[in-house]
Image (cartoon, rainbow, N blue to C red; front, side, top):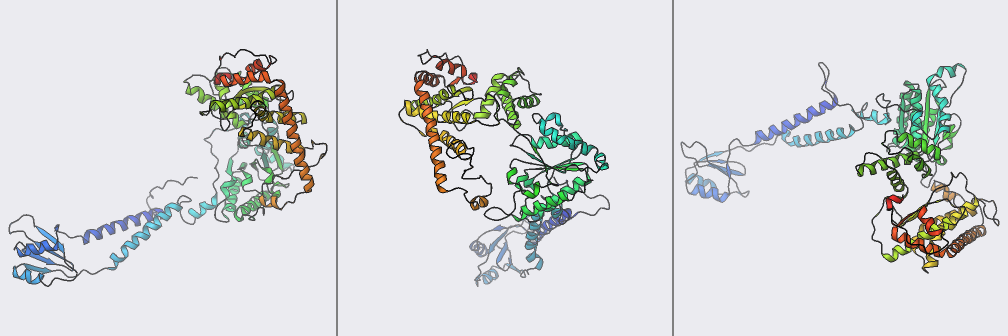
Length: 633
């Protein structure tokens, strides 16, 4: 929370400590300035060398002389001159025995000044000023945390940084949440509890105070929490788990207490803790042991959750995309015992999400959202919102008044594949890239279990130099063995095409090999898709988030079994590569036509791919370049 702006005290109100510091600082500055002014000589003079001073005395120009500890000032002005003419020089520290006789010989009036004493004020004043400035800057730094010492700086340090409820913002309701119907049903009963807690208390019912929202990033966990508070029309306290962590031990626990106290006072209310995994990780894990501040904060959250007496209408929601790392104490009954999962939206849910985010957008044809919903499998709600924003940016860049289907498709490719990069690709490398992508394309086209082709391109986007893109025929919730084997064939077909048509392979298959190896190992060691090994979990790594537990956890199978897993993975990959080679050999003529057109046009959509491959391998005339890169999308 921002600190309140300071205001001058009213009549009878004593100045605050911060104002006292300002007054003292200005007073010290004025004292130092006055001291310099008092010590400065009253008369003006011209500084010259000691030799020039003696020469003026010898020539008889000097009328008066003022002798100081280490300086001499002479006055050469004649009687009646309006402005005195004075000259000053520093005398030698060794002394000059000729000076006084010379002055007396020239009949110069001599005046001596008593030595100046050093006062305690002039000695301590610079140190006082330095200390005052130090404390002033120290106070300004502490002012970033609080308004004053004790009750201000230290007090606000423990008060926490959570958003206080505000009535000026637009209220979010369940109507703003699309694609999560099951999750909305699970939290809907909490709305009735917050609206009428007495109705539940009358019959002794206790609605769960802790609700854990789980799901991938961007699925709307924070939006769901806001919608719950908006539907119930209650104050919404939100914070992030990382906000509780500070350098000082005990600060996080103090912030937790303050936030729960504020929510209890404002009850009925909703508390939302985002990124719960950043503070609620399993205690006492890792190579370096635990984290005292984080564990004390977690203990305080557990204590606050246990402190509800059943009559307090306060619901605590927390969000995480890593429920596997949470401490078991958080998930036991009485705490976060209700778990609500928010999944990635299916096609119908994606269409509903697009409709919500496109309400205020000038779409050329709202029916285009149906095609986008079907062509964005695996997109989260945040991804879809970003897609529409990119489409709006494309339209604005063209100075158009509406968003067209072309803008939507280009935005989809940008979100899915990345921004188009301009690279100087040599003809030989472009040909190899075309062969590689044509291999993926022909394997996907002639493999019945594969997803339908969408497009193939050799235009660099994001981190890739090209890509063969397919759209899911339907939403996959489980993956069959035939579908997975088809994916292996498609992944290795690019390398197989290079080896078959060019005689050598390149590093362009690096990502394909990595993905194919990981998929084959999962098929053999995790999913039991090997007859010799059977349905046994033989995965070498449990993918545990804590390095200490991962190292300490022993392998539960013999070395010979691990070697057999490796052998079966290699066999599976080699069979997939052979199947890809067979497909390329059987359709080599049509593939060469595809390669030629891909080099010429660089982007081919499904209709163009089909025109190249459905002719049975006959040489077809070059496809007309009627579409550009953006138009093919």
